[in-house]
Length: 339
Ligand code: NDP
Image (cartoon, rainbow, N blue to C red):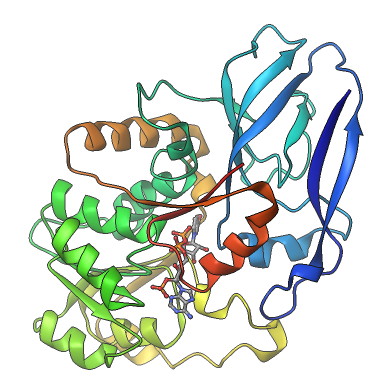
């Protein structure tokens, strides 16, 4: 009999999530039925989307999220013992999975999948640079911004999982001029000195509009927006005619109640007179091309065009702290929990 631990949503988050909103519960798992397999979690992912998305679900569900885990028992020939899977199994240590019915919430309409062949790279990368955030960067930049040679790209949330990846594709694959916006001098230094960004702006200590005007005196062609709010308004007003903004996330407002969301800066004048295009997207739009994104990102890692960093928190019990820490900007690169 396997004992599993899981975090259950006891109270819906309001403003900043509180430890008491979740409850750590133990349960005994039943014996496997035909077609099922048992997964032992090795790495959990904490991501910004969890904060707003979980509100869509009833209280009592297991806290949502992806994990990489090892199959330790199986009654399904396609999922043999010893293989690893990546899937949206939630914040739990052990899970019985039936790929036909799929357990828990299925956010990005992805069934648990066997890890692709990534050679001797760490399996945890399938939660980051070789997983959902990596594909968000790949498809969001190429399909929504559609950058052209010689253009200038601005990325907000630039030192995070998605942002750091977007900037590197922009710089090292497409040869763009890349400007990142992030929340500390250390992060800005990392972007410029290690990842090769042309410029980085610390939005906590600099006036974004002023610094951006200096860094991109002729304006911005592409904006990959991870944060929304005032930072994004400042960028939008410096976009060139026919500029394209990919709206990937809006983390600056995730802890705000819908009723108290800040009023948007009026963007219509610049959008009309500079004929801008602004398009929101969710990465599941490209579910049918999922492996293409992973293969491309893997290729760029091997070619040395793409670097990554993980901020690893050890211990399943510390998942909530890692989640809140990530929302507060304590991570550089991908925030991961090593179970
Ligand atoms: P990150 O690794 O970027 O972590 C979140 C980061 O957000 C923090 O490190 C922090 O960095 C920054 N942040 C927090 N609060 C603010 C704020 N008020 N203003 C500006 N920055 C802030 O997360 P991900 O890379 O996983 O996700 C980045 C964005 O992409 C999120 O908005 C997420 O929702 C979105 N996303 C969208 C997807 C889609 O399909 N559309 C899929 C995946 C992600 P700092 O120190 O710089 O403040």
